[in-house]
Length: 118
Length: 282
Image (cartoon, rainbow over all chains, first blue to last red; front, side, top):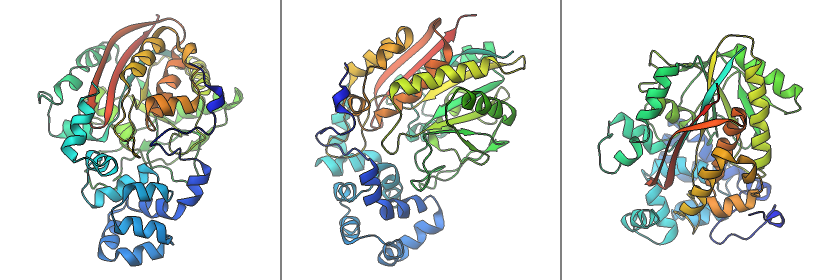
């Protein structure tokens, strides 16, 4: 099963390999989301999303993706799913909700898709 | 000298913590998952380990991208569970074992593994959920062993290779067996199996690949070192790379192991959940 030539870049459809390039691109966005571990930062974001995004220096692409609840857009702008999950928590979205949003399915359709792979 | 009793693997899905809190053990969705644990409970009750080495991957609580250790070992008196952003109630701190931590760190660095030592480390669901699964009520379980957390980076590529993970485990096993105390140690490898949370491929699960990994990790883990990291992303899903924790655990057990129990169920949350208990030869 060895595919040594795959390291370290390979095209996997529908998958972003979060490497150094993406980590640099998404640093501000991910840093803001990491801050959401703390309740006071979540409250501050809810009170003033634009001001909070500005404070962390998000670029226009990142801000627009958040305004549109566009998760694929956030990932393209360098967001890492582990940090974005904390943003999703603010909007009370489960990982199945997030899965549905990314794949054009309702949450129920996404859950059925998961089960279908058993 | 200390003795390594065996290793236990489990998925560490955040939703499990919620299900435990609500005691959904007999709920039709959860039952096939929780049915994988009674044999583990019985084994733990019989052997009563003194220490637990918990190999997990942090998901953005203990570490951020500003400083991202490839291999981090906790060396604290206790490990706090903190809010991961979802406002869930945090568990009480888990008692640490700094004397064992520093013994492992000394031994691993002498064996040329470059370790990040952590005298403070907040632990997330990756560490906590397996503890709750194996020691109900954790950390407030009378049999709760003192813990050493080991976190490997799977947040940001480059992640360790499968060979490095297995080799890390071998060096860890050597370290544990040279700990000058008549103590019993169990090793956890948490995370996995196949799942992907992000992208257009979100929801990807790969039963065939998981079964291949489950078969080989018991009797032929070296075979799995042939899998490249990108192949692991492709076949196990972007977050299925957590299988590295299983490889680290397995390396520490040595060649001669007996499979005590195994469970595999699709899906729990977005994940193919796997549980495995391997006992080391006496």
